[in-house]
Image (cartoon, rainbow, N blue to C red):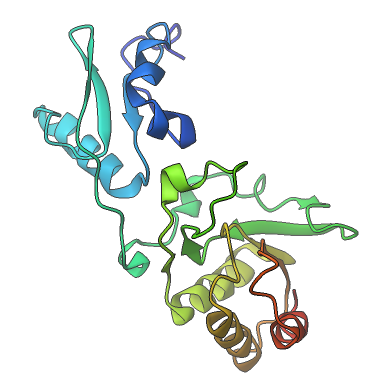
Length: 215
């Protein structure tokens, strides 16, 4: 991209830029301008505003940036506790026909699907997982009504046949899972869905409620 459009600014985020923000930029052979550490929404918005106005980037929390050949790493930004302050993903800016195609992500089924996130963070300390470096270990949630609204929107707008919850630990709060399943039934949300769970909080009642709600 830099070879084709040298003036373009390129930012990256995720596990690697969160753990090694300086090295990510420094070792990119000039390809990268910014590393976004941890959650990206507020940092990215702040960065874009500063760039538009030609202001200094030194006060942008959660950002590492290259300036005059040197990489600076700012202080990290506090994570968002109330996820409902973040708007729904701007899916209308993407070619959603690619993101709703039929596939076998839900094993044994051939369904058109897309993804959503109801919570962030994971309290576990699994040695093989780096997700906590981006989303932290504290569990944070969208409200039940917000999750149900997004489910209805995706079904109505994109005619999906299934939904994938990309939460690291969907069942961290069993009572919440039960309330979400109850809400699906009350709103008559009739769709297949998939989630990632830890085995330790699993209960027979929770599994039964999830299956009845379409999991």
